[in-house]
Image (cartoon, rainbow, N blue to C red; front, side, top):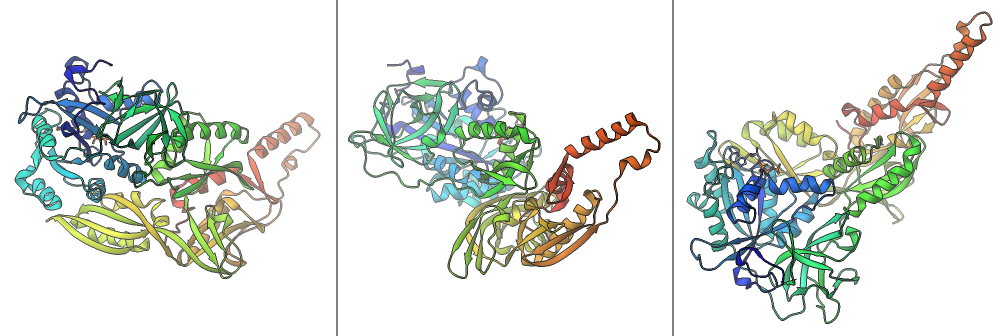
Length: 622
Ligand SMILES: Nc1nc2c(ncn2[C@@H]2O[C@H](COP(=O)(O)OP(=O)(O)OP(=O)(O)O)[C@@H](O)[C@H]2O)c(=O)[nH]1
C-alpha cells in the first residue's frame, strides 16, 4: 500500500462519513487561489518552507509548459476543532471560473456536496459569483458564505455580510469573515466545512459508478482523468468502461492529489481523485461521463452527461498560405486537451485555405487564438465570430448555418438564433446606460433586483449574436469598469435576420458576408463598403463595391479607375531602372489577393476583420 502522510486513511478505505467534498465559488480576484494556498498550508499538505504564493496556480503555468499537471482536486486531511480525534478528508475541487465553461463548472459542482461562496469584503458580490451560485443551488449544494480580505482598510464587512446573507438566505452573523492573506479565520472555515457540508452517500457494495468532472492532457502520461466515485470502488489494474461510448480501458494508475499526485490502491465511495488509462485524447475521457467496471459494471449512468456544443464559430486562416499544414497540426494538438474544440477545413475565395473552428464562447476563442499564435508561432486572420443559425425553408427543409456565406438562398420560412440569459451586476447609478445598451442589442428585460441600496442585478434575454463581439467592452466603458457580466444559453428564438453580402466588381467576398438583424443590415452595408473603398487601391478599371441582401443592393461605393503605368515616368531607355520598377511592382502584387478580377491588399482584409469599429460581425450594430 502506498504511503500516506499524517496517518491519513487510504483513499480506498476512507469512511465516507469522514469525507467532505467542496469547491470554492468566487469572482475573479476575490482570493480563491490565496484561500486554497492557506488551506494547503493549514492542513499541512504543503510544508511551511515549501509554501509559495499561489501554489496551485503555479502548477497551472507549469502544466502549460508540460512539466506537471494542475491539481483539479486536492485531498486535505483536517482534524476539526470540534472533533480532533477524527481526521476528516476534505476534497477541494477546482471549478473553471468562466461562463464559456458553464457545463464544466456544473460537472465540478456535481462532484461536491457543498461550496464556499467567497466574496471580497471590499467589492461585494459580482456577476460570476452569482452565476456560479445559481448553478450550485441547482445542484442542491450546501452553501457557506464567506467574506474574504477583511484585513483590507477598504473592507466593508457589515455591508457585504448583509448583501451575502440576503442572497443565500441566512443571518448576517452566519457569514464567516476571513483573510486568506493573513490566515485569520481560515481554520474556523475548515471546521465549518466539516460541520455543515454533508458527507457523501453512496452504496459501497454496488458496481462502481464514478463521474468524470475534468480530464487533462499531459504530454508524458496521456490523459489524466479526474473523478468522483459515487458508488462502489475503482481499483488499480482493473478494466473500466466509459458508459457513454462503451470504450474499455485498463486502469494503469489511480490516486489522489495532495497536491502532488499520489498513487493508491483504489478510490472508494465518496472519494475524489485522478486516474490514468493511457488514452491520448480527452475526447476519449469526456467530462460528465460515468465510469464503471468492464465486467459486472453498473447499467445506469449517473445523469447529466452532455456533449460539448460549440456556440461561436470563426474562420481561422494563416496569413501566409504556406503555414496551412502547421495550422492543422496545431489544431490537432490543441484538440487533445480540449474536447469542445471542433474544426473543419474551409476555403475562402478571399483568404485561401483555412479552418472553420467552433468554440464554446468568446473567451474560448481568444484562448485558442492566443495559443495558436504564442505557442505555435502562427500568424492568423480570424473572420468575425458568428453564432449558429437554424434556417427553416418554406418547403420544410432545414439548414444549420455556421458560416454566414452558407446562408441558404431561396424561400426562407423562419430563421432561429441562439439566445442567452445575461446577468449584469453594477452600481445602481449605471442602470440607465446598461438598459440602453441592452435595448440597442435587442435585449428583453427579465427583471432587476437590488442587492444592497446602491448595487443592482439586472437580467436580460439577449441574442447571443449581439454579445459575442464587443458587448462586454461596451458594458465596461459605459459603467467605468464597474459592471460584471455573466450569461448562459437558454435556447433559441425566431428573428428577422438577413444575410448581407459584400460584392467587389460583382463578385461576392465570402469573408465579409454577415448575418444581421434586418434593421441593422443597412448600417452594416454602408459601413463596410465605405471602409473597403478607403482600403482598396484604385485599379485599372472602375470597381463598384456593393452591399446586397439577395439581389437587392442596399449600399454602393465606387473606386475610380486609374491607369497604373509605372513605366510612364521613365522616359528614355534606362533598362535597369525600368527593371527595378517592374520588380517593385511585382513585390507589391505578392501581398495582393485576387477577388474575382480585383486585387485587394491582404491588409484590407485584416483591417476590416480585426478593427473594432468595422462591425464585421454577425451581430450588426445599430
Ligand atoms: N489584503 C488581502 N489581499 C488578498 C486576500 N486574499 C487574496 N488577496 C489578494 O487578492 C488578489 C487576488 O487573489 P487571488 O487569490 O489570485 O484571487 P483569485 O480569485 O484566485 O483570482 P483568479 O485566480 O485570478 O481568479 C491577489 O493579489 C491576492 O494577494 C486577503 O485576504 N487580503
